[in-house]
Length: 188
Ligand SMILES: *[C@@H]1O[C@H](CO)[C@@H](O)[C@H](O)[C@H]1NC(C)=O
Ligand SMILES: *[C@@H]1O[C@H](CO)[C@@H](O)[C@H](O)[C@H]1NC(C)=O
Image (cartoon, rainbow, N blue to C red; front, side, top):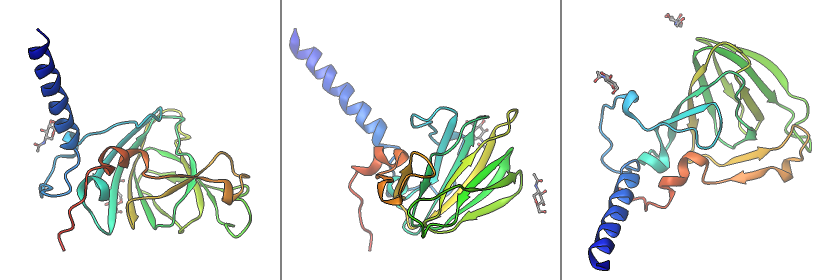
């Protein structure tokens, strides 16, 4: 009796790994895709919806990566930095950008606060510690994010006075984890 059960078990295991790997399309990315049908997840962060629209680890992009993120009221990114360029477009809602530009100090220090709003755009200077926060109690904040030099290597701070040297590297980042193991085929 154990035989058929084992076969079914391994068939299910195979099917689930195929389903998982299908999100990781390093080759053969369709030209046009419907964003509403792309996988989205909160990656363990309450109030977040993240979609990697075009990714390095997920889709084989080489120079840029594009995310669509929605933050429920009161939710935020961690305080973090990365050595890539990053440009934001606010599609909906409003919030606050916290940015510490004095990165030559030992720690980020008290950040400057900037209001961000629908149809605004902002960019983060390379390696400056920052945090994006939906400080609007009534509306979701939706942003389109472009980064250079993917996959992103994020250093996370517990607070603004944590020394730069103590910031914790998270790599691969949460949304890159699932596809990171899939071997990338170099087409060159
Ligand atoms: C995109 O996907 C959504 C959700 O599945 C669907 O409602 C919509 O019709 C799609 N748009 C097109 C143009 O296919
Ligand atoms: C955003 O700004 C552009 C350029 O002025 C304008 O055409 C567009 O209608 C604006 N969109 C919204 C949602 O305000």
